[in-house]
Amino acid sequence: MLNADRTDPNALRELIAGELTAARERTGSLTDAVDDRDLTAQHSPLMSPLVWDLAHIGNQEELWLLRNVGGRDPMHPEIDPLYDAFEHPRAERPRLPLLPPKEARRYAHDVRGRVLDLLEASPLEGAPLLDAGFAFGMIAQHEQQHDETMLITHQLRKGEAVLAAPPPPARVDPLPAEVLIPAGPFTMGTDTEPWALDNERPAHVVELPDYLLDTTPVSNGAYQRFMADGGYFDPRWWTAEGWAYRMEAGLTAPLFWSRDGGQWLRRRFGVLEPVPDAEPVLHVSWYEADAYARWAGRRLPTEAEWEKAARHDPATDRSRRYPWGDEPPGPEHANLGQRHLQPAPVGGYPAGESPYGVRQLIGDVWEWTAGDFHGYPGFRAWPYREYSEVFFGPEHKVLRGGSFAVAPVACRGTFRNWDYPVRRQIFSGFRTARDVA
Image 1: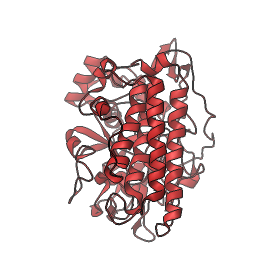
Image 2: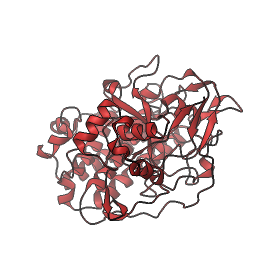
Image 3: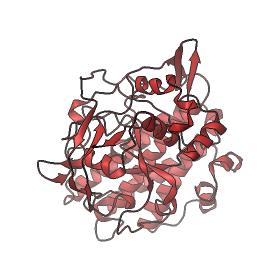
Image 4: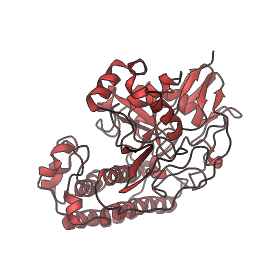
């Protein structure tokens, strides 16, 4: 949640309305960029048709805000099963009788109009879903998360480029390769972030030994050295599961890369271009990230190591909301919000540096961490099990920090993402760590 006076309901309503509007504008730009044929097509079995995401956004908004908070009757109860993500896997969604684009837009628009009326009449206190506008904030985050999902679909889409954005700042500073994070306790998670989701809670103290962490995410240039050294063809660097996956999938490079003579190219949103050495490597699976780390004589950081580097302030011994402090993210801090449709070169964003000197922990690329996705000690599923709890276990690995595709409202130092370790279409990269000898 961005800064607002939570004791002033009018200021809180204004903030919520602004977040809902920003999310809908982004949804509109992603769905209006293509014609109806592209909206209804499934561009990859890994993703839904864009028109499904559009109506699902409206349906979840209706379910949580109009029905659960407002007590309203369903607008179109017959469509609820169509847009239940657990009832219909992505691969089968194109065969469902989905709302056509015009009707999906009208439905989402009608829901939003009623939600804004409800917001004006809601006390924003007195019930868990209303306190600090939690349910409204949850829905704003949900839509922005789907906006990132739809941007992934755009990346998988074949054809002419339909999206454009200015490049990120090119400034990079000479930095040490790694920084020391001293041993000691820190507070992980949160009890005070009003729009934090259940898997970010509760706050708890974690004790860590000394460790060293990459100052920046691993770059394309560094990753190409792993490739040139035969890293994709040497089972020493891969877990047994990772090697089996690498062989079955025939992996030889990050997703969307191709070879043209002596040069690596990559396709991004319909444009084929040389791979820039200075950018963080993108579209790699957890298995690839882990193999690189082993090849480099290092390892992936644990979630706790990542979060301590991002949030702990040794001067005050408190955990911040963001690496730079408690101030909401601005364009000087991090590459967020699809402002730029690519990561910035490694070594940028000095204003976003953590107290330990670590850069680009927020934005640019999601960072794979070492561990499986589990609840924190004392975890309580709320307001529904299906957001986090059903995904706990060794099948999912945790990613931290957000990407250039993530909105600030859905990105903070405590935010946790998760996915299968084989996933590559997501905007994923990594940095590495090592123990202090």
